[in-house]
Length: 122
Image 1 (cartoon, one colour):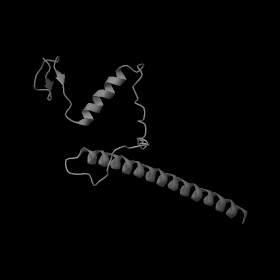
Image 2 (cartoon, one colour; image 1 turned 90 degrees about the vertical axis):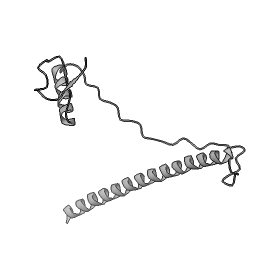
Image 3 (cartoon, helix red, strand yellow; image 1 turned 135 degrees about the horizontal axis):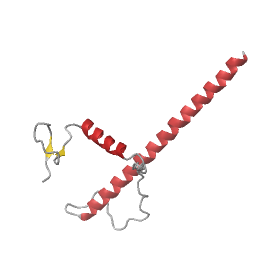
Image 4 (tube, helix red, strand yellow; image 1 turned 180 degrees about the vertical axis):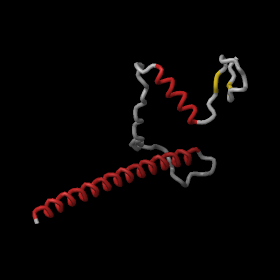
């Protein structure tokens, strides 16, 4: 039988599992388990790859556009393509902002470095 024991007074039988009351208790339990066997390597997950949108389709056939009639499946196709394109454009804008931010930071650091060297000469 698999039962969680939350308090020491609940049961005197040590065969029952002790459940963690809080996240701190759970972390403590996992850390103690890791420290019992120090030689065993700990699993460290890799950083997930950055999300990147799919490239746009080269050719979309037989799609009328947003003016498709009610009950038409063509509108749903148009809507999904438009949604993917908007996500792709938003991703491109975010990448441009990142590049711009880092280039401004680089220029700022170079200016500070140059001004620091000029200040030392004076």
